[in-house]
Length: 181
Length: 189
Image (cartoon, rainbow over all chains, first blue to last red; front, side):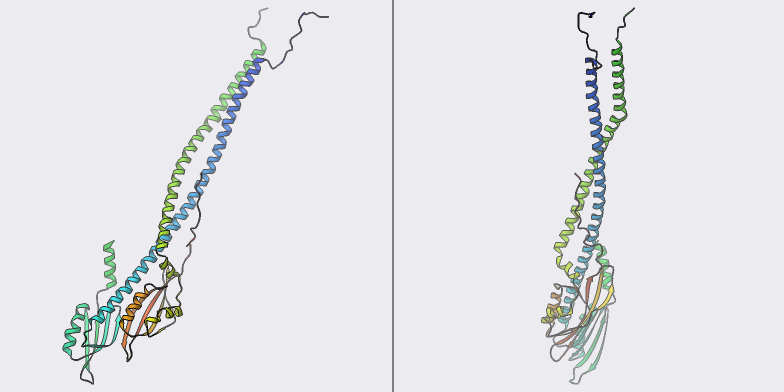
């Protein structure tokens, strides 16, 4: 038997107000967690990138250090080769000058070029020609000059001229280089 | 009986709303905002690091360019230092300057920090000093780094001039850690 003329309204937990509240908070929480998740992910990526940068920097350090060493090494090689080439050129000029120095009237039989000296063996028509034409220029080049003579069978005079430099040329060169620097 | 102005379901709803709101605030202030600050800080630091590494990379490239330039301009010198002295090859190449050329076996003279020096004594015969000058010019373009050393002797013979001199041959022996720099470095994105 019915006591009411209307049908009873079904009661439910999900009232429109509750649904509205749930929707609002669901969206809010979704946004919060998404943002938090995003920052966590980005932080993780940043840490990874920083680790990569640290590794790259370490590799670059090694690489730069190796390049620097290699450059220094190469420059040493180049400097040494230039020094040697220069030495050979100077030597050529010295020998050229030596042979140019010998007057036509004097004949050389032997020449020994030492690091700081020169020994000449030869034959001269007379002492005066030797003294004026060879010894004088030799004296202007070398610090010490000794000459010994002995007669030859044909009337000419054999001579042995020993010439030494006292100045340490290598030291002078080093000093010059230091001055240039 | 006086009727309540707020119904019981509404009170529950209000409590739930307050609880959720509290959660949102607590979560935001305790986790989200600090994490966001950390994110911004890390992003700034990363930017600075990237700039620094870019400069480093440029410096590295500049050094590499200098090295490559040196290597390309001095290829002949580098090869000469690396070549081992070969007496037969030397004689074949330079006998044209002498009417006779003989070399003594090479002797290790000194072992310097980077180079090993070998000494080779030569006895030769030349027709005129000019041949020797030409030899000295040619020696600077040889396959080896050779320094003509004292004593140099010239002695007049019936035919030509006999000459003897010492050569110092420079060779690189210690090549440790060289060419170990061929490492490709990739910048992080």
